[in-house]
Image 1 (cartoon, helix red, strand yellow):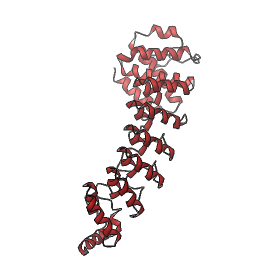
Image 2 (spheres, rainbow, N blue to C red; image 1 turned 180 degrees about the vertical axis):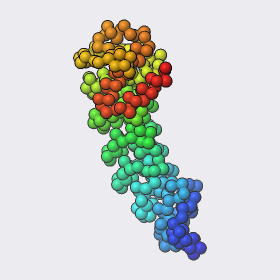
Image 3 (tube, one colour; image 1 turned 90 degrees about the vertical axis):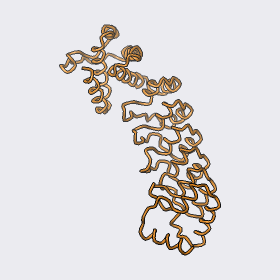
Image 4 (tube, helix red, strand yellow; image 1 turned 120 degrees about the vertical axis):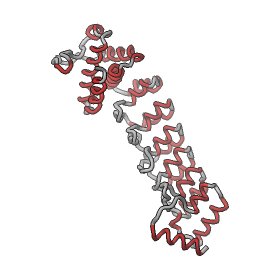
Length: 316
């Protein structure tokens, strides 16, 4: 036992990270008898208590492994008796990933930050729960202040994963908590655009019921621009329909000035003008560029417009 304590003292002084501590090894092995012996030894003072919060070279702590395993009793003991740090190493994220709702509830009740960024992860707890269809955990995180507008390292919100995977119960809850703050993601899609792109009709209908009409027309027109510039043949008729709806339900624009960069063409102002270029792929692409220029630059998304220009250049 003295040797154990001596080893722990050396580790504390050198502040080195090890692949495992005796505690993390026991927890990973789910050896309850060994875990009990180690914890009792810590409480009696034979092993330094810093072993509980020690971050191993994989960036994990004893509490992290307990959360991953779903061992609620051990999680509770490590926090209440071992004074383990809860806002460390993504313990809430790993519990959310693995669907351990009771542990998530407990961590949140102890003050764990649902929006905390952890460098070992490319997502927050809400993304983790949404991507894996853990409805109860999503509700718990939102109840404790999780921000649904936060982007992960892939520049996506939790809502986008729910839409893409058709976890529509979660998607509708996240839509409600967004409070109409629906932003364009890093790839140039709004939630409505993504729902339409994924043919998630239920969520499209939700957005049609809550968003202003002009916003709906503009976002679907932008999706049409993407389909057209990408040369998506399967979506060609859908794109034309979106362009048609935008023209049919929007006041005509002010007189446009022809420019050389667009081969002196201007954005179509009437349904007849649009119909005349329907079978002309080059003219439809130019129309799409003009529409996207107007909508994206006006709303401060010049970077997304540039990406569309780059795609258009690859056509020629």
